[in-house]
Length: 205
Image (cartoon, rainbow, N blue to C red):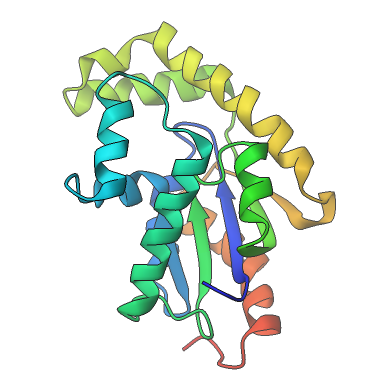
C-alpha cells in the first residue's frame, strides 16, 4: 500500500443500521465496503496474525490498536492483489475502523478521509427497544439484556465522541437513521456521490 486510499468513514451506534448501509453501498459499482468484523472473521487462524489474534481473543482481551491496523492493512493488500478493490477506481467505505483516535492517527498515513458519515439514531430509548426486539427475534437472548445494550451505547459514545472531534467539522455529515433503508441510503448517496465524482475519473455506472 503506497498512495493514501480515498476513503469514506461510516459511523453509527448499535442499531442505527450502519451494517445494512455499508452492505448496500458495497453493492454499488465504484464503492468497496470493508467492515472490521468481516475482516477479522476472514483471518486465517493458522497465520502469524491469526495466531496473535487468537492469543488475545481467547483470553477475552481487546486486540491492540497496532495489531488491528496491521490486520486491516494485510486485508486491504489482499483485496488489491485480487482486484476486488481497485484504489484508482473505487471509493473505500470503512465501517468499524478506526475505532478510536489512536487508530485514526495511525491510519492517517494510509487513508485520505474525504467524508465522515455519522448515522444518528432517533433516541436511545427507542434504539434499546429496537435492539431488544431484534435480539429476541434472532434467538440471541443474552444480547437482549437492556443493561448490556445501554452499556454498548455508553462505550460507543465514549469512543466515538473524541473520534468525531479528531476530524474537521466540515468533513462530517450527520444523517438521521430514521426511515427505510432505501431512504437512509439516498441521504448517504447525496453526501458521497459528489465526493466520488470529484476524485475519480470514471463516473459511477
